[in-house]
Image (cartoon, helix red, strand yellow):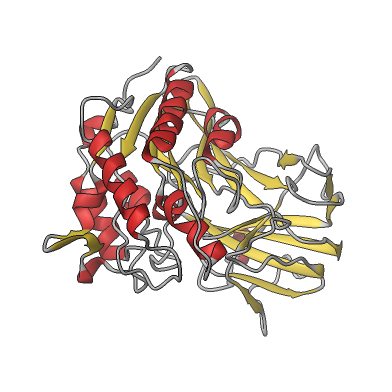
Length: 386
């Protein structure tokens, strides 16, 4: 059987030097950080991806280990395995670059939890980071790569440097990339449960799987939070090995974030025509590479607690965009009505109470399940080979 590298985990990253922050960036100095992830698919070997994409200085990693997770910061010491980079235990990642570890001959399956520990012996500066990691991470002083359980560890709510895992899988394996904003990334779902709606949808699939390239606060047309979606296509979709389908949710932050940034002053977001033109460009670029592209309506957010986010103008533009998406004029192979899956039937501009993550803008685990359960699995035909 012919095998090849297929993405089994992905985490999109944010520039810590942006001018507007929803999340407080940070760095490390002579510390070990330990972060966990859950594989969406399996294979007979794996390799780990690390990033210094937005660093201002080369990132020196004094050691990196892989292990099976037990609980919290704990690892199974019998599984503790040093990672190598071109045969070396250490690696320097240049400014703006990424690195991939040497292969680890370790059979893994979908759903397995792995822990990656990185020793960062010097001052890293602000880290390339992700907003919603799989679970809480941990930081401790010095080199504690092989420590079974980290004591008195600082908890890390954000992810740092770790951007993905590839697995050596059958060459016919095909996957989908979930691409977009916080509704994709899984904000306000329970950490450590892998309950974003793309993950819950992935577990319903009988062939292939879905990896997540969402960024909370991300926009289609404007940078911050994260590079805007149109500029992320090459790196976060086309460069993902095994991708054949793309699932998109975007637009909330194009409509709402300008008002929050400018609050208490008013601010204007894109018009419906500008936004739909951007979605058409997005779909056309992805279609040009042979990918199946699945769009979705913009979720409801009336009454959100975030100052300046909910405006009458934004709501009107959202209605116009969603009407276009549900018509025959959209450029996608299919459109999922995500908004309808979680909307309050009596007040459809609002999230149903039982699906509300607490801020009126994000859904919780149950809302994510409602979205995943509402999606027709035939849209994700990941069995076909090229």
